[in-house]
Amino acid sequence: MLFSTGPVWQHGALPRPSPGTGLKVHFIKQDGEKVTVEANDGESLLDVARANDLDVEGACEASLACSTCHLILDENSFNKLEEPSDEENDMLDLAYGLTDTSRLGCQVLMSKELDGLTAKIPSATRNMYVDGAKPKHH
Image (tube, rainbow, N blue to C red; front, side, top):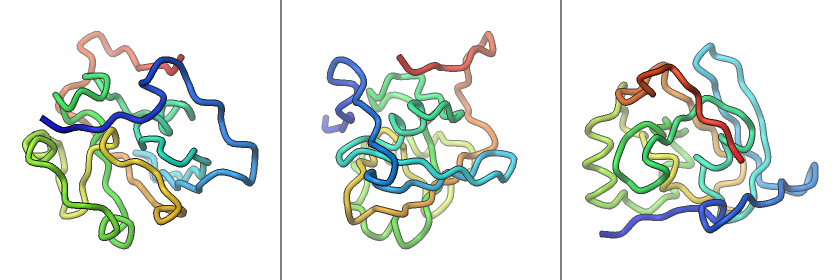
């Protein structure tokens, strides 16, 4: 089984890029608000969202066992990525609001080619915490 985890999951958090030095990621929140943040090269979209307190769950801790980090990417960025693995596709099949440009945030690693990527956060997930708790980055 192949899956990716960003450097944050390799024991401890990455320092945030200095303003103006990181790769730009535009998140569109559930309410339609656009939030632009900066990412490190090699950092997963899930880790970027968590580091910026955006509502992306990642219940399985990036082990490719759920669909709670489902994001909808802009078509241009989506087309720059390699095809999702069979394991990612299996989890995407469980995602709420699946689209042609859906990916799991834990599997998309930022790179210079993806600078300026836009990711829409779906309005719901199928695996939200039962008690309503929200994940917090460390």
